[in-house]
Length: 195
Image 1 (cartoon, rainbow, N blue to C red):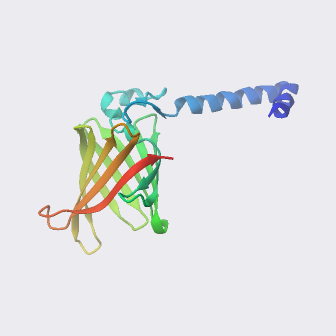
Image 2 (cartoon, rainbow, N blue to C red):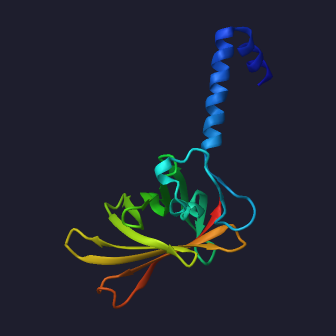
Image 3 (tube, rainbow, N blue to C red):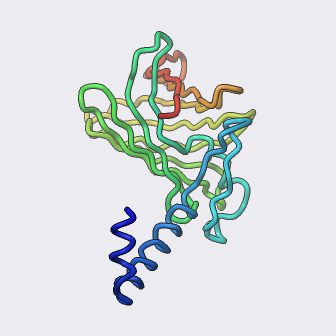
């Protein structure tokens, strides 16, 4: 590293390039959201570059999900990994899920200020499109929506993300109903641990 810095310093153009590269790197690092290392997992350091349209506190309600996670079931078995990043200057969250058997999926999440609710659009390699809407209430994010299979069969979905106090982790539970909400079954139950 010292040799590289010495080479950059020899030429004014290279010195300028080096300064610009370091400035760009600093800008990226400073703009990245940082999850607080102590206290409640819902405490998130404020990103330095939030778009004015997304400065309302409601846009920060789901920031506890931001991070690089390993997800395990109740028996400690790894279910997959999940990476959640703030995108569009803090106006949304992007999820990149990677689970067993090469199952991958992606979601985009945002607070819809006009409708005063959260929205998620999920797609995966199984061809699933899941549109969810919900609210942050009682310390948890709860969203619900419906999937429609190619044969027209409809399934109701209800997903809850809840921080686990004092552990720096969170739990996601996903329930489904194929009978219009009369009965529900658990489709997914995972605890997130920081990677």
